Each structure stands twice: as C-alpha cells, then as structure tokens.
Length: 275
Image (cartoon, rainbow, N blue to C red; front, side, top):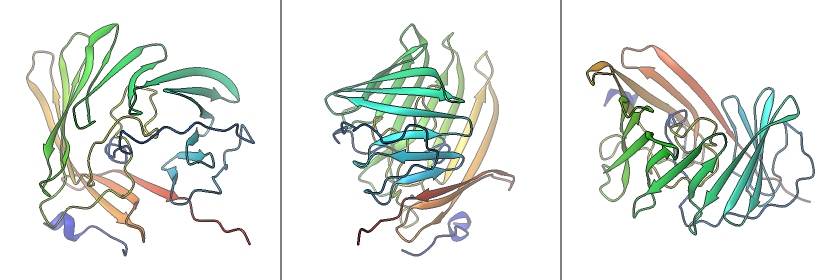
C-alpha cells in the first residue's frame, strides 16, 4: 500500500491527532490530585512521570506528580483540573481571569457519564466500555453516534463511523475511519481522545473509554444537505513519524489528492533523575 510505504516511521503513537486517539482503559482509577505548587506556569512539567504527552500542536499539557492532568495551556488561556471522587472540575481562565467551569461526572469505572457547562451532555457506552453516543440532555436531537468494527487484527473493535445530528435531528455529517490491512497496522502507543466531543470538553482527560488500538490511516468525510442528500465526500490520508518508543511525534493529514490539511507535532516528557 503506497501510503504505508511512504510513512516515515522512526526506530523501535478527535480528529486522531486532531481526529482519533483513545483514552486509557475505562477501569483505570481516577487519581485524587494534590494541591499544585504553582497556578499559572505555562512551562510547568511533571518531574515524576516520564513519557507523558506534554505538547500536542499548540496545546501544552502539565501534570501532577501522580501523572494526573493538571493543566491544558493555550496562548492566552488555560484550564486547571480539580479532582474529587467521581467528579472532575475544570476551571477555565482567559488572560488570568476565571471565564468558565466544566464539571465531569464519572461512573464507578471512571468514565464520564455527564458533563456540564452552559449545556449538559450525557454519554453512553457499550459493554466493552466504548463511547456509543453523546447528546444534549435538554435537546436529545443534538447528538453524535459512534459505531465500531473489528479491526484487521481480528481481536479488538475500533471506531469505524461517527454520525453527526443537529438540534433538529437532521444528519449533517458522517466520518468513516480505516486503520490498514493485516501487517500494515500501526499500534497507537499513546492514545488521545478523538476530537469528536462537545465543544469545550477536554480530549486529554482519559475518561471517555476506548476508541481503537491502532492509528487511523484514512478518514472519509461525507456532508449532507437538509433533505438528506449527500453534498460532498472527501477522503483524508494520515501519515506518522514515530519516536524510539513507537509514539507518534508527528501526524500529517492530507487530502487524497495531496493537499496538506495539517501537520501536528507531539512532545513527550523525558525521565528525570535525582543524584
């Protein structure tokens, strides 16, 4: 497969950087955080946990010593996360001033079942702990549906289709994902939640279940008119550069005819030593 031959893979990885990734297993315990030592440090980094994602494109991430996400940091804004049993509170700041608050309610497995800001969203999962649906509690027509298919390895199910519906219940878009043929799969060594959650909901909290075990290789985006007719169909190709541990350190997305859509660099924390 030409796309696979051209992938730059280092020795030894939405939507999927931008579109796809996945969270840690749903039965992982959500750690209770400690009080941070600083509250407005764009360059804050954990000194106890190695291999954590600390930069994803324009987003900087910092962690507590336990490895729990502490901050998502943007150019003029950041979110700070506060943990309690089965509840995570995200306080958003712009130019140093509190601007928003989001609360995530978790079930006994550590999965988000409800988020609340100016809207309340409900999240549903299948028996495998994979997200199958989220919707607006006050207007259930506003929703996204997630379907999974057995991957080429034949032992795990990966996200195959996401269908978008607006507040009137009209289908507006559908995304379809593939991961490669047997022998050409690229394991996702650092899964991140796909960029398919409601606006303002963190992709970096590992509380939305499992989406796939491999990196996406193609995505097809179908858009629809209000009468249900297909308006357009566009295919995107993904390529990766991997680091020594097999984690994606660059994710490039192009349209099938070669036009580049995005190129996202990732950086991971390195181990520190006390002498």
